[in-house]
Length: 68
Image 1 (cartoon, rainbow, N blue to C red):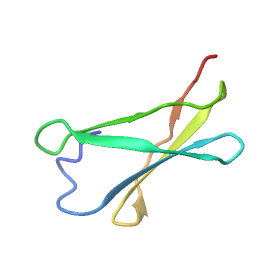
Image 2: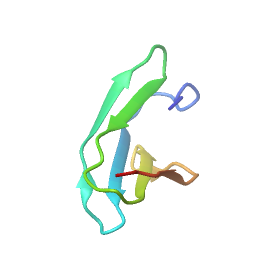
Image 3: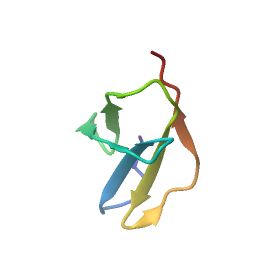
């Protein structure tokens, strides 16, 4: 995730399953204002990712397909 043009603030990333369960994420700085986000899926279903910055939703839809 590249936040170079966002300025200073609070970046939040929420990963959830189709059934609404939240999955813990790990956010690591990758240099500058770029961050690497990872998570470990708990089930073989589609996961949604919601990204907010300073409480406002970042436009776009992000999905990760998990396989068993």
